[in-house]
Length: 210
Image (cartoon, rainbow, N blue to C red; front, top):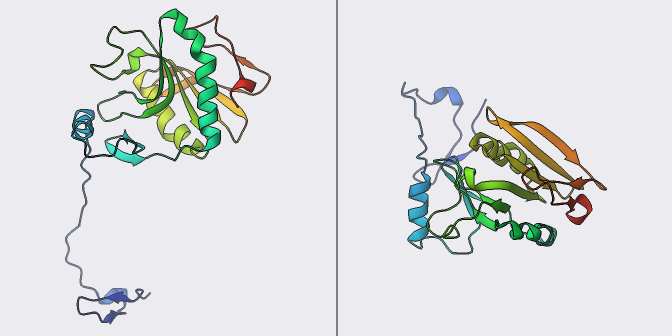
């Protein structure tokens, strides 16, 4: 096997067989330095990031989020309107804002219904115990949301999470978190009407979302 040509320090091309490279016997390890939520919040407070930068902290790493397309934005708008009735129950509607769910996880949820708090979460961001219902909307990010974010919500103890799959015209309703996973996952498609467990009087038709 031969290496692809590589530029040397003097600009010449190296095309030596793999066997010719000496083995130093030393393993080169690259260690990642995870950021805690506290460190991440200090970075945000310092103004080091643009205010409109779409990033979130997942497992201590700063990840770039997918841009919000027209379908995504429209769906979040429909969800906001559909859940507005919950505000009469002294709840807070939290739209595309961060939630702190673990020491190294501060994702940006598309929509969340929160317990009321006197300061409106000005002093500290919502934690998992504050979240009654959390909703992620996936246009191009379905695999990431399902494989990365939903398990973290379960591990944090978020009692109910919905994943709106715009391309699949469906909503995954996730409940009963235990051992880092939701034990009850149902797929809802039109004409099903969704009813959050914490708000049994609230009706959200799937057709009004997707």
